Image (cartoon, rainbow over all chains, first blue to last red; front, side):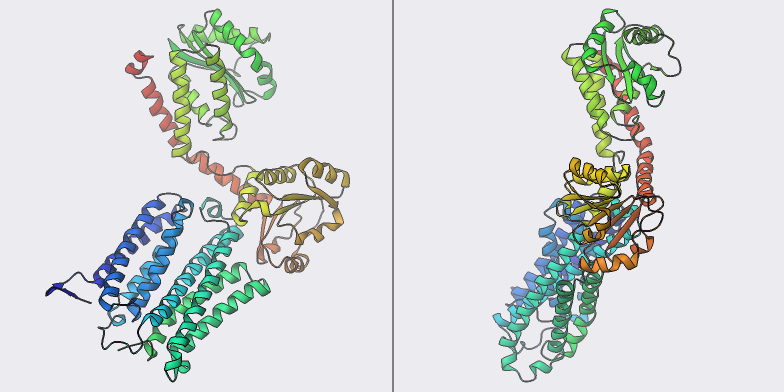
Length: 282
Length: 341
């Protein structure tokens, strides 16, 4: 969105800021490759700073978009993806304050780069037409809760990937398992499970707000593709949590579940959004 | 005045020879006094550990006469008759300083890169310092050696990783479990290595240890020593819902644990991770159990391979360490530094 201040066109738009953020995430991804090869042993601070720089640009982009809309910027796929990414990087930057956990950035940056490149596709950010039918604090809350839930699911998937990598190395007696700075696999499983549980709570709250704010005023709410898809995702994560707590299906199966569930969300989120008249405003 | 060293170490002679020349700590000040009194050295430090006996001396004598006098001193002080030939090494500057720096950095140790020697060297130096048997030359040399050892430790991988079976097992447990304090260890059989491994795990905070041995007396003895409990050997499967680490070293001629036996036990454990360490030869645990989910099986060869890989990693670092040492020795021997000393 090109911003106009006092009659002057500002060519460095929110999208440009976001592009700059994605460039930082890309640099961080390149740097992460060397960190992976060195077993995360050195210079994780550089990676943290690269992600911090990306985060600064990311927040600026979100701020500009939010101020121009006068509401939480979660109205199209570009904004929603930007919001999910923001939740993920924020969580990492807080966790990364503990120097021993800073290496997690090597897992976060490729995810952020992927999300960023995807979000920048022009089709995902069409010019805003008439104001969406449903606006206001309730809708913003609904979107914010749900997108933060996806951020938590994303981080759970990252922890799941770390678990799978370390578990494989331990199973096959690789020296890499010993040389790596990754936390014990039991802790990785706990982190992944807690993120998943918190994400599930956020998703539940977000969906309930959606029903209260929008569902009561709109016919066909429960037949909307995105609403059905959201319920499916909710059931998927509920299943994962129940499997773990009730049937002790932890470990590798749970990690694969967290990774596969988030891959499903990533691959279908955008498509269902486009198919949903409630969530897509051409 | 130059720094020379003569000594015997695990590299030059067996323990039967080294023990005859070892200095009791209480007699070291007397020996240092005797060295200086006889005019052999102006300054001296004696290092006497289980792996080495060395005399570092700053002397005005030429290296040849200094070595002869120091050798004679060693023989006389310990009242040893008969010669010392290939067992003894004698080094003059700069090799003497190079050797001191290598010893401090753990490069001359039996376990490459170990840090215990640095503490022993510091203790030997402090003893000589306290009794005023050191001066500008040896003070500078030892302090630089300590600093260089610290630099080697931080800048290279010479001390990285575990290189004994017991320490690899502990490291392995720490890669699987969040905190050893929440996990109990089962020891099946009571071999030497399994006992060492259990001790290492306990010293790193394992919650407890259970011994199951065919000889109940031995199990009870070890349990009493390590603060654990002993159970009859036949009862070990019943322990599996409580323990998370099992070390096996029985003398059974066949597998005592295989997938059909472990699967129901894993169900009982609600699939909590289980670390199995099989130290027995022939093996006690069927390797197929490693294919069960949440089971991590390591046999003695797996652990030894990891220890060897770590050792190789350390050996690969020797050249970098030597380079650091050469640079530091060269700086120590620059004319400006020598003038200041």
